[in-house]
Image 1 (cartoon, rainbow, N blue to C red):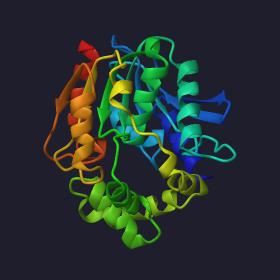
Image 2 (image 1 turned 135 degrees about the vertical axis):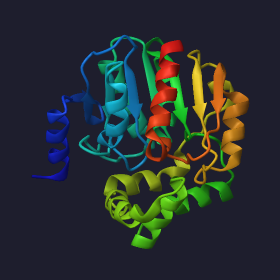
Image 3 (image 1 turned 60 degrees about the vertical axis):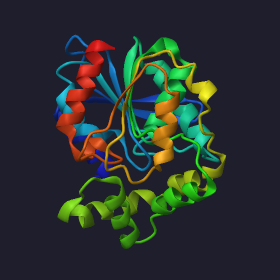
Image 4 (image 1 turned 180 degrees about the horizontal axis):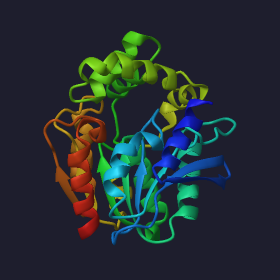
Length: 275
């Protein structure tokens, strides 16, 4: 049985359902919990090279309080990769799918590329978004030197590159970094991911004018151990995100749910209760 099918079976045993949503960019796979708890729906949007099932530890901690949705973005996991795949199709396909699945005003969590997508979705469909919880979102303007620095980390072609990636995005990857690096190299070697890297120059950063139009309350989480995105990106979002509460926790890097899932779940649930 393929690994993704095994993941689907495991999630089913834990009580999650999965479904495919048709979009103009192909099918988008969603993992979904039951409608438990009193909080609004919580959507978890992953970063580059990840998939919805990677959020299982966070899903397990949040599902008692809310319906939780975790999609595989186009070109990732079990979602389809459209022809001539690029960043615009990835974002557009995800936003189109979310429009079909969200039937109330949701709390949208997004990390990295997922944070960029969450902001784009909030701008396109503000009536679907009750609040945004952003962890190191992508989308800040970069100098050519800054762009080359973070792109060089994402170009994973060897085991050493994958280890370097883990050491960059996690606060303290520990002895398991070589095991995790094997999976990173496998995922980042797909044609879909290479297409996104090749399209990096066409990724449109946010402008202050765009961000000023976001009406939903925002929680910005930017760990003290962030080493992938440059400090200028944090300064840009701090300066331009409206209605934002900002936290800079210690012991968390570019992917906070992988560093301290209990802390992230606590902060996310607190935000969901008060947004």
